[in-house]
Image (cartoon, one colour):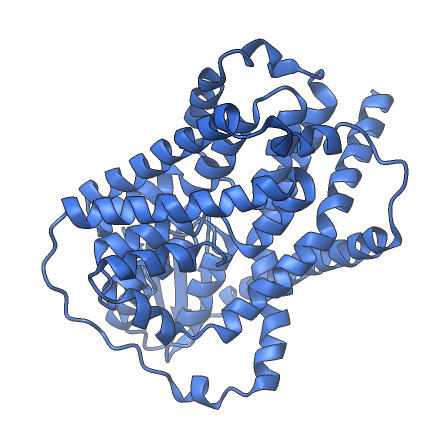
Length: 416
């Protein structure tokens, strides 16, 4: 038992060391995109019903650091501002598969070919799904809602944007994916420790069977694009074909039950079916291309790189791992402080109370977004969101239920 714990611990630390420096760089670029990419520019290029908007939506989605639940409010906001169902679907398909942080993490554990192929697959499947959606669905002409810069956005100077870059990248976005990143690392370390080498080798003669099994497991569950990387890398080490591992990298982050339910109620069942089929067909197609058409040596980096513990760890890796660990600890300290602050506010006596069940939230970023926006409403003193159930309790004085409900729906969420 002691030897198992030691092996698990060393495997976890090794994976953490390998990814930390690339994740740090990825979070920095995520912050840059969030603070320097203007929202009105996004709507300008996506807010039209044309093939060009589908292309733009898929292209923009590749580097954006949004998970499959976090992308829903953004995509639906684009739809409300005039984007076609095709452009919306293209954005929803390509965005959760990748992100600047997950691409760098893929490069760190699985090599450059996997990383670049992942970006290409997200882009192509986005265009494919968006184009099919525009061709097969009919929608009424929507009144486009102009996306105007607020005074706050205009007045934001370069210094504030730089500060916002670090705040979003290393606090807000890290808080968003920290849970799933840690789960991914723990699962990868457990798989590496428990399963013998070439565990999946008995299925290696039938790569398609590998892919179908992985696909069935990937569609209903949630795993973020970054958290899926160490799991996929270790699965390859245990004998899973690179193509099947790619199916997991693609389908895992892009699909889950909650996302499919929300989409079916907003953009329609037909568009949702096209969304799902685009990911399924794309994942299997690109997996087969990797296993049958491309040079095998391009995708053996993960097998060779993760199969053995490195003899030495660079000083840069040690420093980045320590800094990243401190940032993770800080995130959870802030979560605890926020939790106790909310409890303290909730214990006070207020005149009004509103309760809602909000559908569409799936990550900490969604929770913070709802709490922050609702607390800005006049009269609201406390907002408590239970992420697992969606139950939201608003306390305050002279609350306006209509204003609260309008704010929730404007964020892209649904009230049950």
